[in-house]
Length: 165
Image 1 (cartoon, rainbow, N blue to C red):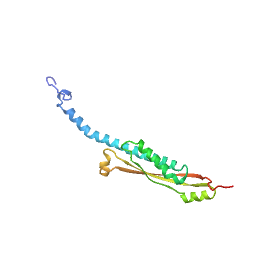
Image 2: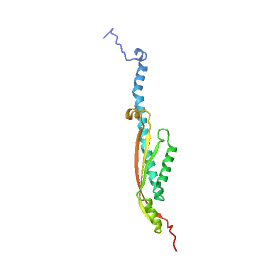
Image 3: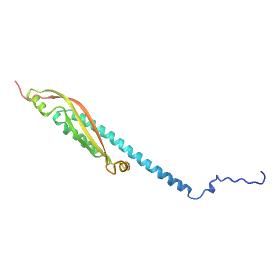
Image 4: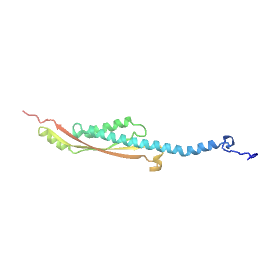
């Protein structure tokens, strides 16, 4: 139509000032908590995997050697994990280390000229994880605790200490 002017309001010169800033702030209000929660979940998954690995290594090391000393060897592995851990994951605890072979059985084997002893070692470890955001919503600020259990078989040859001809 001749003489009629069409206006287009899609150009940037008619946008109100500050609209971009408001959109950025609104987007960040949603984006920042999502990123923090994802970071916390990554810390939790990493902590659980490290706890499982520490428990498996402690059970493996505990099954090597004299079954009456399994607790001492497993505690050394857990202490090493604590020394290598970060501040969010440095609270590994060995809850228990049990062997199916008792010290009385090992002593009886020593009196009877030694021999093989077979059984299993079970190690239970715990870790307290302190994420940034998730633990406030999940447990009221207390650390989140995870537990791992590993059982490892062993065969130990009791040395002959009875003496003989």
